[in-house]
Amino acid sequence: MIAAMAVPADAAPAEDVRRVRRDPDAGMIAGVCAGIAGRAGIDPIIIRLAFVAAALFSGAGLIAYALAWIFIPARQGGTVAARLRPARGNIEAVIGIGLLVLSAALLLRAVGWWVSDAVVWPAIAAAIGGALIWRQFVGPGGAAPAEATARAVQAEPRVEPLPGARRLSVAGVGVTLVLGAALVFLWANGALDAAGDAVLATVVVVVALGLILAPVWWRLGRNLAAERAERIRSQERAELGAHLHDSVLQTLALMQRRADDPREVAALARRQERELRAWLLDRPAARADKSLAGALEAAAAKVEESHGGGIEVVTVGDCALDDRAEAVLAAAREAILNAAKFAGDAGPIDVFAEVTPRRIEVFVRDRGPGFDPSSLPHDRHGVRESIVGRMERHGGRTEIRTGADGGTEVELSLERGAS
Amino acid sequence: MSAPAPRVVIVDDHGLFRSGVRSELARHVDVVGEAANVEEALACIDDLRPDVVLIDVHMPDGGGLEVIRRAPREQDGVRFLALSVSDAAEDVIAMIRAGARGYVTKTISGSDLAAAVERVRDGDAVFSPRLAGFVLDAFAGEPPPAGTDAELDQLTAREREVLQHIARGYMYKEIAQRLGISAKTVEAHVSAVLRKLQLSSRHELSRWAMERRLIDPE
Image 1: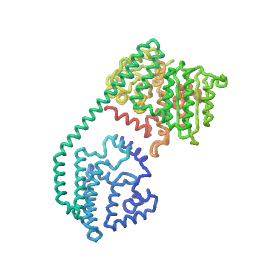
Image 2: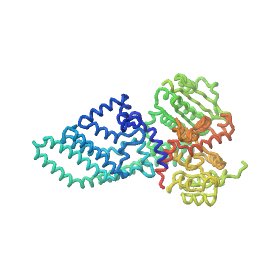
Image 3: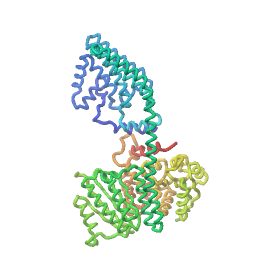
Image 4: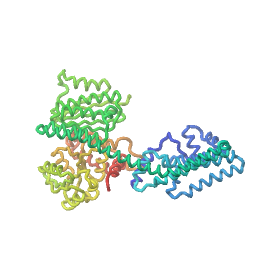
């Protein structure tokens, strides 16, 4: 049920026009040419002619087409290769495709469209070997990350991943095929004659060494991995210990000494809470100078530290800190500062920011006695200049209202449309 | 108030916190029991049939999610209010989707908590500013493509407005005043949002709930 929920939800957005996708509906055979043409934005007939021409030249086009069919995913659904994965008991299908390729090759050979045995057979062996290696190391069908996570979440995985040892041995077969094909190619084309003995000796020594050292490497690799994991764990422990010691214990000691000042204790506790949360969530402070939400939270934290009181920041959506966002941020900072200065004792201060593609809105609300903006003394530059003036200069709007039973809310809004 | 004080069970693995909440709530509600783990909580709920269970999200043996999933359903009159130090979206959303009728953080004041308990007892939903923010975030953007229940997958303009006011720190009564509607209507909107939150198949919500389920030892 989870799978049913996750897969369609993920599959749809993963449909990316920039990727080549086979288009079986528009295609003559499997839609490879139509898919490539669609991506390149040209008439499919051009691609088709190119494939036919390549097929006439020693059958390369046929092989290329078959590989493309197998490895390029269709527009709806995955690759043929993914559907043929051996875990689903489709060894027969793999053998079938192999036989088809073989018979096509033999047919071409009989008809006479053939370069020479010395080129084509090694090429086919190398292609199969290469495919095996790629499948082992590139991962199932090059799944998009979203799809991969969805798969990890499924209660019953569709595709049982090969265990490590089998992966390696399949990759080994691939390596052998590719190397063997290369050697056969060199040998058949006479390139090895000159250095024949030396090469043979080298190959024998390499193979022998490989056989001897393989288990040692294998064990070594596993031990290294285990050791690394252990080292990471102990590092994490040390880091946690250091952090608790530097921050949490210090704060607790400080709180005991200031126990007679509840305001101070509350402020200390809040600051420690914020630090610990940021640390636990692994939120680097660097985010503060990149995004509006981060910067707003940082600004509120700073005011909270200097003026005490609780400031709760809730943000919906986010945007980069461009000129307009900077202006809103500066005005909001001023409003938060004002609220903390004049109404910080009256209760918590709520900051709510909502960023939509069209506009940025920030609300700063306090529980103070409130004030009448029209009766502001002229020396209150804070509100007049830093908030209202700044917002106006950037084409934004400021609204200040005081509720019937106290509490002031400053509303800042700025259209983002023009940017 | 006319109705009798709500009967409350507190479930939290920190004894110190339980007794703190108990003494804060003592004047407003009737704390009938306490539990420190999942099994105790289930036995306690089964035994005492409280109106409201104040439940901690993180506990060593499966946490609040486990309790909500295994406890008697709501028609038996037991309602859950999640209470946690966590304000991570996946925790909040997972608790709500499991059936909690609200979510408040442990820093809430005693009188606010008592009011929240009463509201949950009466079948209403309790949204903190942060939860309102999460919901607005989760329901932002286009609803998922056809085939899903469009009604459940997006908020009405009014519901959005109410949530925005909650996120701005307004109480239900103040929201009613500002929007020119009755407090009952505000509550109805919030309850509707809670229902959508629990039933919608929106991708973000499933993802959040799923992330939580992965961490959850079952």
